[in-house]
Image (cartoon, rainbow, N blue to C red; front, top):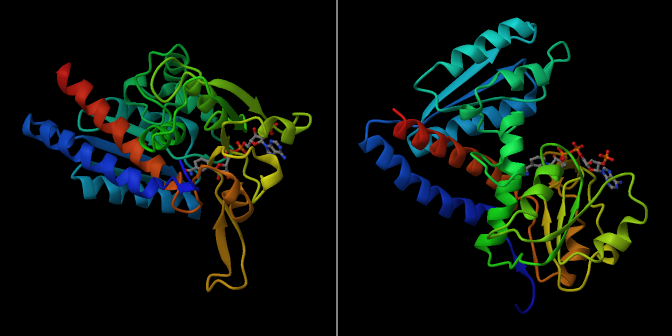
Length: 296
Ligand code: NDP
């Protein structure tokens, strides 16, 4: 590779959507319309935006879409009842409960109640375990999106040192677990760093592939990156920007302007990982519908 190339999730997700459209049509020809339900409890504005985006994408793809909006005061038992209903709904092949939930509801109890065959977020312990032993039914959407970005940009991961910054259950941990599996887009030597890591730059500087998911705007600077590294920025942070009409803008965890020139490839924010998450959620729903159609 000469110079720096941009890894654009926007373009990559569009080519995945084209592939999904073919699979959706095949399912429809066989009498199955893939269906995704999204449950939102309360009225968190950011969650409302995500839920709307998921519904819109389902409709664009010709999938069945169900949006369930429950009031903030919904009880845990009330939400469990909705989960049981969706577990039994044959028109819904996958569903997710939008997080975070109000504090009076125990997220773990709700996630554990989801039928693992419909757990398209891949949060149920059965699916997390299957992913870890390398026999996944689903992959968690954001790390799966990052892996697809690497594979489809021709980044060789085999034997490469991948450093993952962040150890959350949603991004960092599954990302690390996926990159250490055998197979395409994996077979990497993986190091995970987090807020308790001593001398973080000495480790990030060793990365052939640096995947950053910390939620700290512009934290990773050029001096923390090896010359020629591939950098994937999962971070999505809204910061004040007096020059923007909105008064704010989205930035990643990587200081893009300073880091870009040092890399062989880098994903920007926005336009990088962001569009991949919903795309992989749709892919999981189509896969769930295909499995349901076979077992009918
Ligand atoms: P969490 O807050 O759950 O985890 C952040 C991780 O970063 C933690 O493991 C934390 O360490 C680590 N961390 C924080 N500060 C430092 C530091 N100074 N040095 C080293 N490590 C640090 O966040 P998520 O994983 O859920 O999300 C991370 C980012 O990715 C956010 O900006 C989020 O908005 C974005 N995101 C984007 C998505 C997309 O679709 N593009 C999807 C999901 C997330 P410790 O565990 O020790 O606290």
